[in-house]
Length: 402
Ligand SMILES: [Ca+2]
Ligand SMILES: [Ca+2]
Ligand SMILES: [Ca+2]
Image (cartoon, rainbow, N blue to C red; front, top):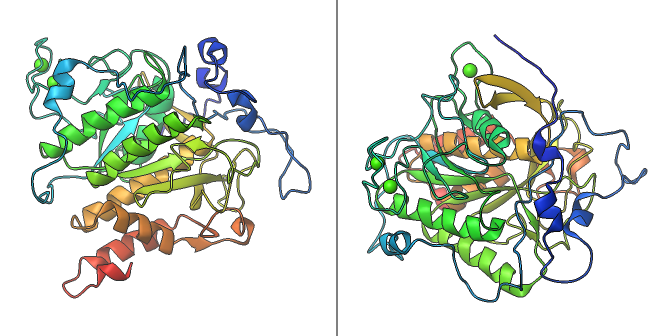
């Protein structure tokens, strides 16, 4: 058991100049304000510093120039043409291991703890420089890089963050490093480069179109992990976020999203996306401390917008180059929930995204520290959630009850 617990600060823990320099599309406080709330003693919050391995939830690039008023998506014409608007008729239940799409910096698909856990595009031939499946991306074998419009997952910002998230979900049970919550049960599809190229929202829209297209072609994509987010105050951007996540809903794909790392801030009245979208396929996660005892001191909360918490402190997982590191943040809590969803879909492939979301919500372990902070007043209970999914697969189960 290599338990390399190198404590290093990710590059993501520092604000990238490009992000900070980008103009807000509307006035008022800079985006950083919502993420830099000063700890308030007496607010049920421990004012001691965050762990040294803390990584803030990435915000991606801000849109540049004028406010976005058009739904212009960063497109290749071929990509748009290839993506059907919606499937004709009822969608067949996809087969194979549940696939979790990690929208983030890219995943190191050759990591020895992940190389057997990656989804592989059956319509693409690796390394021939040809877009074999006609989806607009050449050689997108394990996903694609939305920032650079290529199959090169690792190029750009945040590959350490994305690879860490992927390992929490699916790192192999192979006697080295860590074991993912859904080891051997889930596959990872990486949409890397989400903090590069265009702004975060535009990249997200494009990533959604990519995974919906693949699902329409038969890939068993069940959930998107979104360990990122930012505040968007303009109505046009808010509508674009909602429309994009609705596309995931229409494709029966769950979105598991991280709330902010605002040191105890309440997110109820923050226009935080995608986390605060109120749609039946969205589940938002805060971070518990490493003992799963209290809300982590760096985590935000909000009983109208955050459903549950999960452990996100001092989490050992994969990083590019074949290593493992500990990181802390809501970014690390969120994939625990996404992975649990994968375990549930593996138990009962007929479950919908909304049903799995409801089961996760209804099986939380109540925690006094979470009352008034998250809507369920509870934290992830993996065993209970998986048991509920298993029970729903029984011949006489009444799933609608969930
Ligand atoms: Ca392709
Ligand atoms: Ca190819
Ligand atoms: Ca392992």
